[in-house]
Image: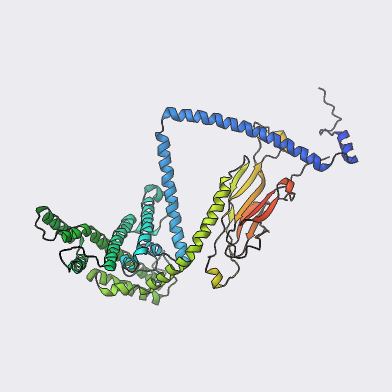
Length: 525
């Protein structure tokens, strides 16, 4: 074919242009025809990619069957460990958030005890088992599950994989194992629970003596004053008596033998608490010294407390250490944290009334989220979660009676970003179907869940905010109490507002749907 240099580079269909000018061909029909053609091309490419994936999967399965399943199992174990570490790290962040917002749970206070925190509202002067002894049996039963979970998280955080992932934290400066700390609390919890059940039913351990219940209480008080070495010696002596048959009251001695290990755990827990208090006292000394001589002494930890408040806190901790070391059964130890205990009871009672609503709220959110996630992703869809951290994230003020049923929180969401190829002149020249151009964002599907709006008759709204980058903008969703605003970074392009092009904006059944695609600009001569 001989190229005529006088002809223009771009071919123009003159008869078609004449028909277009006469109105015989509508621009919308032409765009629709091009869209259908592009869709057919995309479907063909998707089929080819699916065939290639299936062929690759067959080859991978064949290779795995030949090499054996051991590497796969090792990989699964590694993923399970990483998942457990992730949940443990998230649990620590949740505890810090609840403490910072002034709504701690009991397990948060027990966990806060090993952190180097000098907030007087959360510094436990008495050992953790004092808090346990002030709880009813029903609360002890539910607390046990929480402590078991904390112990599992502690084991995960102690693995070399977890240590290599995190920066230096108070966890690394602990003078003991965190999992042992939770094990000791669990052992003491079982003892406290047994005592409370016996106190409530006045059940006698020995049927031969009417005073055996009182004798056991006195024996327990006696064991509490023993050290670990003395308890070990007593354990050997009791075992010897039972083996030789010289024990007079076997039920009594068997009870003591079963609980000696528990008292050892209680002793270990008391000593761990003393170590923590001494660490905090040393930290207070360091902060005070750095304030007196800022040029000579550097301290990495800061405190919002004044020097007089720190001195008062230090004196209280020193008094607690002295009592724990000299007389661990001092009755005054059980009254050193009365303020914390009273605040905790108020929070527990508040949480009981709120949890009946909050748990339902969480279930609704989770149900909507799982329902949307179960729909899966289309060929050219990806999960989208480019969330923006809003500096001033506030919701409308509500009265205490309204706020009683639900606390401010971010809504859950499951968003999708639509991607695809743009076959413009440049891409047609430099790419083909076997070597396609990079995918670009074609649109978004936002699904924000608001199942518990205080005013469900008022639909959530969205606004577009500019950024320093002209190619990026922020879309912000607002719904009102109890939900906070939430925002995402998106591509700054003009939207298609036609429902035929996939636009959807509605609020139904507690879900805000906002789906849109971007306009495509085509060059025409």
